[in-house]
Amino acid sequence: MSHPAPISLSLPFVWRGRRLFAVPLRLAVCEAPLPAVLDGAARQLSEQAMPAGIDGLLLRDVVDEGWRTHAVHDDRIAYVLSRDVWLYLTCAGSYERFLEGRFSVKTRESFARDEARFVDEFGVGGGLDLRAYRGPAQLAEFRRQVAALGAAGNGPESVPGDAADAARAFVLFARGEAVAWVCLLAVGEVLHYAGSGEREDFRQWSAGSIVQRHAFGCLFADPAFRYVDFRPGESELKRQFANGAVRSAVVLHLRRSLRNRVLLAAHAFLQRRGAGAGGAPEASDGLRAPFAARG
Image 1: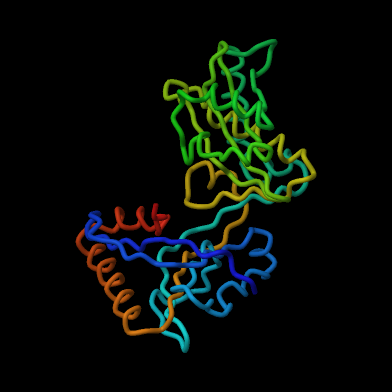
Image 2: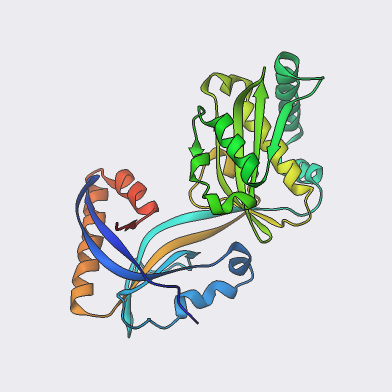
């Protein structure tokens, strides 16, 4: 298997939420797309040979097969930096059938009441003022419209310019003002959840839930897409719409050496002691994206 070009990263050592120092590493970062994970083709990521001339491999969002946190093998040391639940949505069948299978009658009736209430107060022509955005020019307008809204997940500014053609964004308006948004990025047959946001004073109107339900309805209707990839992390939205999940992990593979054994043993010690001292949430948050690129 060929490896991606190595990049310089730093492994932070954190104690009770405070960064003590960081060790620079030269790593090849490897990850697999969701379809490869689901059909088992991604298992080879954890079995590939260690590349020459660099410190090791960083395996991002690979399936967690119950690995030990710290394991020494013949040619490497494997160290699990973080574990997570990889949530996804399979877009199979009709959207109406999905809603029926995912939500109770009572919940679906509540959705309908929320939307009717919103339309009665803010609707245009008897319906929602919901706008879709695609392509570079429209994505620029999308960013402008939602610039003042808070973000849940990554903000719209995190969508890189060269990914504008892949963006699928939706904005809900009330009296001409943007009040909620959701954005996804298309990569082949997979839509990657980029983020969402909602104006604070429109939470009582369920604006975020409304725009997300309609966005997923539009995406279900497009036969080009089979999955929505919600990684990384969890949120109420992801749990609400996901109909599949796998356990995932971020795993560091370093060459087997005395220096690396001491390095990773020290990191593991700080994580265990930090957890015992009430520092686990802060440390875990830092390890969700465990490495920071060095400038």
